[in-house]
Amino acid sequence: MNKTAKIKKNHQFIKLRKLVIVSVLIGFLSAFLGISLKKITEYYEEIFFHQATVNPIFYVVFPVFGLSIIYFLRQYLFKKKENKGIKEVFESTQSKSKNLPNYKIPSHFINGLLTVIFGGSTGIEVSTVVATATIGSVAQQKENVFRQYKTELICAGVAAGVTALFSSPIAGILFAIEVISRKVTRAFIISNLIAVSIAFGLITILNEGPLFAVTITTWHLKAIPYFILLGILAGINSVYLTRCVLFFKGQFSKIETHYYKIILGSIVLSVSLFVFPQLYGEGYHAINGIFSNSAIPLTLTLTFTFIGILLLKPIVTSITLASGGDGGVFAPSLFIGAFLGLLLASVLNTFFNAQVIPLNFMVIGMAAVLSASIHAPFTAIFLVCGLTNDYTLFLPILVVCLISKYTAKMIYPHTVYTFLPSISK
Picture (spheres, rainbow, N blue to C red):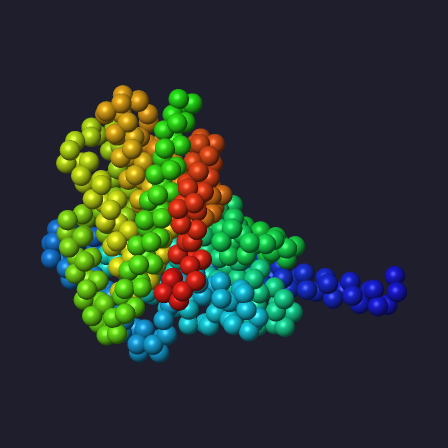
């Protein structure tokens, strides 16, 4: 081997070693951030939601208080800099000069937390994704050798963050591929595998269990036609969610005085929470509630409750985001999917004696609506299987996720992430 080839080989080895080291750091920091945000949010959301159920006046107080704090933090702590959500990650990966600034880490962490615990009808997932993407972005700016790995390191942070939230390293990597990068390089494989391994190792050490404790026993071939119907309905509901987000952001962007947005958003949110407390925050408490009572008989009151929730959830989510809240469509999609699945299963069993398993429809519905909302079916499959720690329904989830995605794309080709105007988040 000549001297030039030896130098080149040593240089490649040094680059690889540095990439491994930085991937370990990104994985640990992103997982730590994701786990911390999840735990703090769960703790305080439970406390505040309990207070609101005991004293309903807090359904009015919490939203206006939370949105006001976020507004003042953005004005004075973060120097009037707006959070644009995952769109910022796209802009950074598609530009050589544009990077995610450091303040995005505390900004999304704090604002995402405040939005959810004070009743904002969204989740912390997008806040986590942008904050962890920023960790990757900051890391790649530290050394010239990492400049060519910008997308890979940003995706490593995102993948580790998603892994920490949903206990699924496969979902973390697939989300980075399907939504952020859309291409795979050798550096991507190395950095992302290391980052999600560190993240999964950390949640294993901390003994993080699945978010939803459910027991799925089996599924039947006779339910396939009903699963197909669920996929179509999930696609339609996801388009409704997407169009609501884009519409209300467009309308609220016309309001020049920001505090008017807060007042209007708080009024809508407060009334909605008062009527349907299930819409409070991420809504995971409501999902766990219907998981526990999935066999309850369908009554007229219950039917109207489910329909009201399915119609209102996209609206209150959209208004939460449009009036200054921080979040995205991950948690709302899971919420809508669970309630849609239970409603469909209950209707089939009550009026058509279909004898389907409601629990299966709820789990599949969660994956289907998420798949259609973000156009990432494989992410949705492994994410929901990770949430329940059960792969019994893998095959029907795969089929239904593909149906829901392509149903949604046929009706409306965009997601809230891919819609071009700057009003999208």
